[in-house]
Length: 174
Ligand code: XMP
Ligand code: MG
Image (tube, rainbow, N blue to C red; front, side):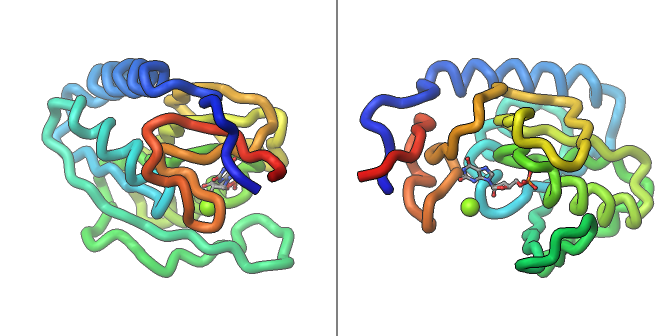
């Protein structure tokens, strides 16, 4: 498999979506002094680093890593081997993800973080593939909705490749 020669989503389109999301988030959290961005490793890091630099509010950044148990198809069976360092209790928590697909991992992440008793818990995703949804998930901030294609670039990988590309490509047979 390799990436398509032409991007599916150009860098300008990604950056416009990031700017719009940053404005929405800035408006929503403007009176909040305890915003904690929880970035889901590894795919969310590129998006989050662009996004947070366009939010001129005081905020803290935490990272989590999610791993699904292979072969187990039930909700909530997600390990979080990297957890936030600071307590989330009473904080306004915003989860940053690269892409919302079946919703399995994301809903389990939200459920686990909710057990930390945050004051509020919202989700921001750069990409959404609604046609793939198996588990319902509420994302309050969505960058770009796409068809059911496997995509790489701008944080998204195939076997750890392509994360560094500034555009988003589809994956194709060689
Ligand atoms: P859910 O739980 O929504 O999982 O099924 C979302 C996670 O699945 C990965 N994913 C992708 N990674 N290109 C990728 O590089 C894709 O098109 C894609 N679709 C889903 C990703 O890790 C995301 O966090
Ligand atoms: Mg991946």
